[in-house]
Image 1 (cartoon, rainbow, N blue to C red):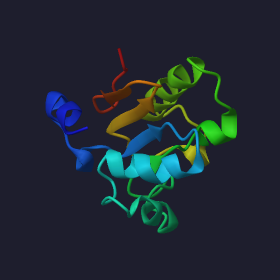
Image 2: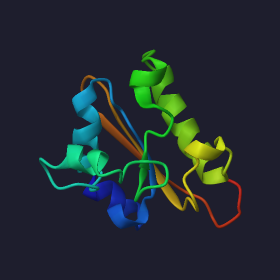
Image 3: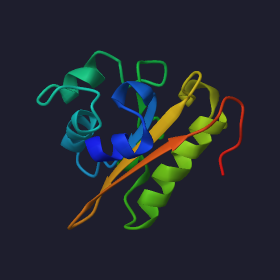
Image 4: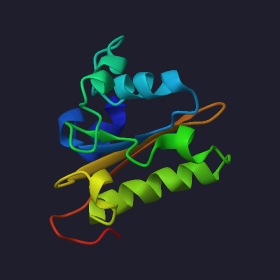
Length: 128
């Protein structure tokens, strides 16, 4: 994750919206730690304290995550990226929209690798 942040010229504090590959409940907590929003072993606390809510410190899985929408292999990653893009464009339904989204990320894992994407949108701009 640090390499992805370095390549993007960003860090965990820059990201305020994220989609995490939560194919199992525990992956929400672990993914929160991987993206740097909670210290290792404390990712679940981030959620319990409301920091992962849409109006919290970093709206994580405001789409409901894979647990809410299912997990069609391949399509789930596209859905995660699409939801981050909608968040950054302000196109998510009101109660799920992260206020003033600046940088977003998605964390996906597959059988043999980990994929990380960081997305940014200029203030009021369109994503390309």
